[in-house]
Length: 89
Image 1 (tube, rainbow, N blue to C red):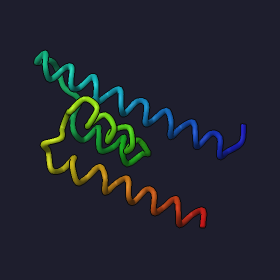
Image 2: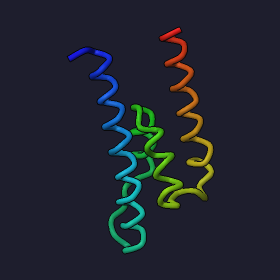
Image 3: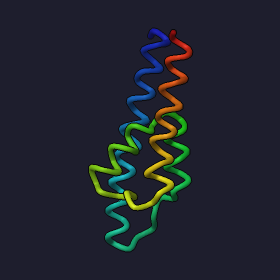
Image 4: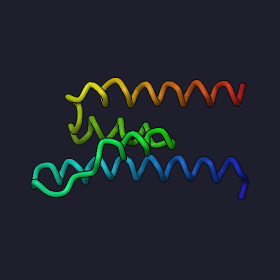
């Protein structure tokens, strides 16, 4: 497997996981169950799942009132895009 292909599949998987975790956390919040920590969402975002977290936020309407998410997740995404542009210029 090509290294770029491996990186691509890793990022796609992280984003799918992040999106799914947002849905699970929304479900748990409605049913007063054990929740996924906000720290976990920021970690998965920093590892490459920022698009999945951002999509999950607005698809599930979850964590959209928390300024740390509204500003933090897009900031992480912008930094990741800038890093990719810098590496592949």
